[in-house]
Length: 259
Image (tube, rainbow, N blue to C red; front, side, top):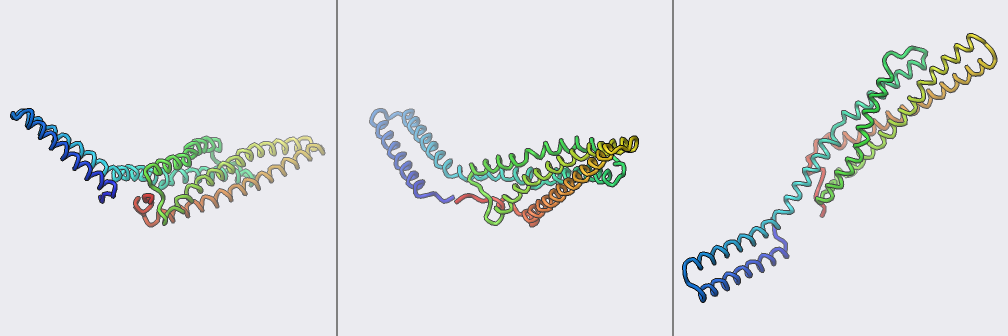
């Protein structure tokens, strides 16, 4: 590693200083005592002083390289454990699709085959895990900054875009979940209104039935709109992910040292 001007000056000062101390020590020992033990002690002290100076200069030389290596370790963790895997996001997509399918069956007058409540429980777990990802990305990015690393010019847009799409997909998933949770009880209310109207056939029960029917239809439209938004956001996320990783960039291509 090439030394800076300041480091070269420090090196010269240290060497000159060391030589001065050594000469002074030799002179002093020669005047005071000329026995072998004194000379060995003087030489030992001189060697220790030289080793200390050498260790200091070596540490200054290699510290930036060691710091960079640690920074790239953090970058590898960010990529391999957070950005690259999509399995949790795929699980989110599949779970919401199954719940939405149950909802569609009910809107079409068929009995939902499966257990929507079990899927909602599974969805809660998936969302709880995914909620941590955006904050984990920000935390890792903060760590990279302390090591002087940043996204490369070629990939910075995709790196930032992927984080943003993670956040947007979480928001879209929660909107769809909310609509679906609101939708299922309305089917029971509509069935109840049908039974009451069938039993009594009064104007009040007919009005209640029409209101329940309209409320259910509106809910179906809201679910469909939330599902379209979720699917669109999921598609955009996979597009950004593919652009970022389809060429298999190395960690040194994704992140570079700040100048």
